[in-house]
Length: 207
Image 1 (spheres, rainbow, N blue to C red):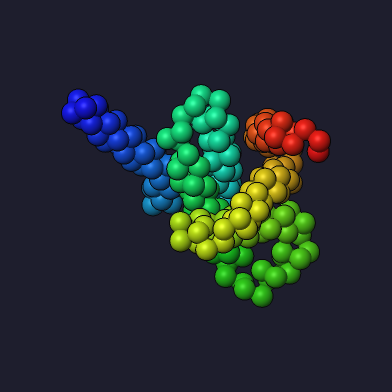
Image 2: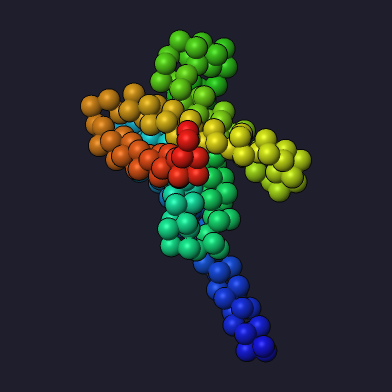
């Protein structure tokens, strides 16, 4: 009994270290971008470079977040469950930076143009819609809010699948001719949506 208790504590300690390492790795791209700004090493168009990098990292962490559930279920790693929220919040963090870069450097704080951009430029429209969904998911992720929402929480958080579809449309529109990243993200998204659909069908064969 005593040895099992020590083993459980060691596993818990090692898991905390793993989570810490993952969080440090997740925040590292931000500091690399900050160093790029300081060293003026972001190329001829730093604003575009920052917009692309923050957007890419937002998508990557969103895909990682969505991958946690199938990975956890397939390999029976229940301890991975909290990482879905962690990586989801990192996705929101980089999406917020992406939006901030757009407002500060691309629009240069011309607030009057934000509304017209969102309404008149379709790729901005879908991007802002995706960002709004991520913001909603982030705001409803604390445990106290989860308890308050009850079953409604699950309904709200299924919007993440709509968010990733909108994100793929957004990035495809932006990259246009250079669509390798968009095709890769879309392929991963299709696999994740396929897993989710198959799971729903197995649970509800009559649907």
